[in-house]
Image 1 (spheres, helix red, strand yellow):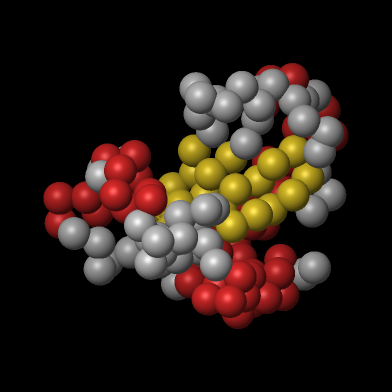
Image 2: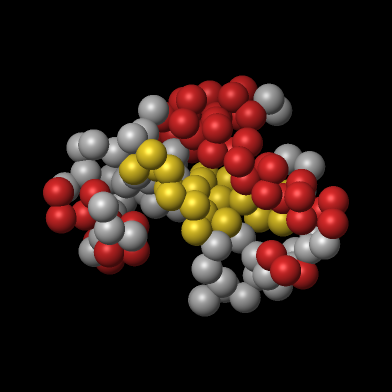
Amino acid sequence: MPSGWAVLGDAQFLEGYSLLLPDPVVGQLNDLTGAARRQYLDDLARLGDAVLAVCRPRRLNYEILGNLEPALHAHVFPRYAHEADDLRTKPVWSYPASAWTDRTTALDPARHGGLLARLRAAIGG
């Protein structure tokens, strides 16, 4: 994308979980100015549009945290009706650690290649 790299997240228990990584790397959103800031946020919305079109979630959650990784990166989390009632309306970080490390939902090029191709096409790249 013009502002950086859209990538699938390592854990795909919410299919389509993606991130936008800026290029060049900056510490936080406020380190971007003017056109670069607008482009990053526009690209984030374009990534969200692609996830909506391809994965058909109920809604999207966007998060820019920076608590553990001191470099700007934005998370795009699709949220689905099939999520458990006690998790559906909570932040995705409420999922147990096992959801993030489960090998059956870990990003796998063989298993997720089609998803990646559909997202790439929806973004226009």
